[in-house]
Amino acid sequence: MMKGKKINLGGHLIIVILIAFWVVMMFASPTFRSLSNIESILREASITGIAAIGMTFVIIMGDFDLSIGSMLAMVGIMSASLLNHTGSSALAVIFAIAMATVCGLLNGVVIAYCNLPAFIMTLGTYYIFRAYAYIFNKAIGIPISNKEFISIANNNIGVLPIPFILLIIVGVAAAILLNRTVYGREVVALGNSILASRVSGINTKRVKMIAFGILGFCTGISAVLTTGRQTLASPDVAKNFHFDAITMVVLGGTKMSGGEGSITNTMFAAVLYALITNLLNQFHVDAQWQRIVMGTILLVAFSFDFFSDLIAKHRTKQQIRKMEASA
Image (cartoon, rainbow, N blue to C red; front, side, top):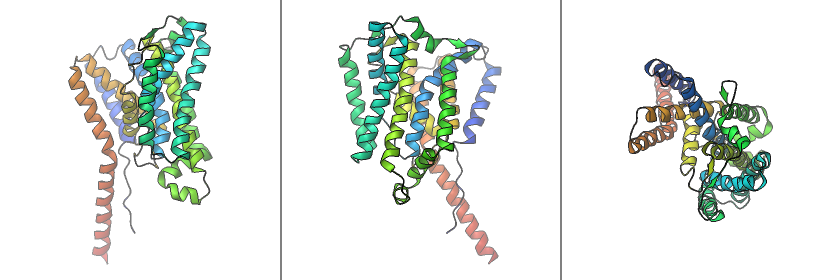
């Protein structure tokens, strides 16, 4: 059977849109092209973008995780408490990343080995992690004054914000893992067909568990950056974090149905998403209208697969007609 070649609408298109937006705003807005504003965009893109990199692995498998915002809040408030009690920023960072990785692995173990759907499991931990974030310090935020910890999210190395440098480091490592290793090929295979993966000898349970662990690891880094950026650990933080991360991944061309995705494009999508948020704030767009814009972006992102399928079917029909006409 002939198959039309599917177009990855979120692939190269996301780079073109980002460049176009950036160039237009560089000429249109003096505020936008200021170094401090560009630094702000890159910093904000990185905080969610790092978690989106982890989410890319999970979505390529055909799953997703609704719990990462609650995980971030819980890990943030626990690591802030540890930081204030010990005064060690290194210990707080290690704890945050380790704790988030364990939470991700917990999701992965139950999903993979107990055959619980990712939606059900991560919806459950969405509520559990958030509830514990409130319980831990009796729903009271924990202020942070440790300069070393705060500097991770707010300082630069040269002209580049530290979070953006971390985004690049995590992104390069993730791209190598996804594109150059056996494990990366197994993740893609799992997204294309879990049954075929099992038949070919892939340990699908292990692959799933590790992917959720990677997402937890990335969320732990985002928790450190979020807490340091706000100089406050709050149980109310990051309530839409999972939606933002998923939107970045899908905007970058990763298919929600699984089997196809790009770490690099997720990173570009993170910058575009932060850029749009920055523009809305610059033009003092009402908060409700901002939600409408972001909701529209979410819908457009989730429509990529649908339109790609339509184009593929249209091309298939055209090829069949040409073959029939030449017969």
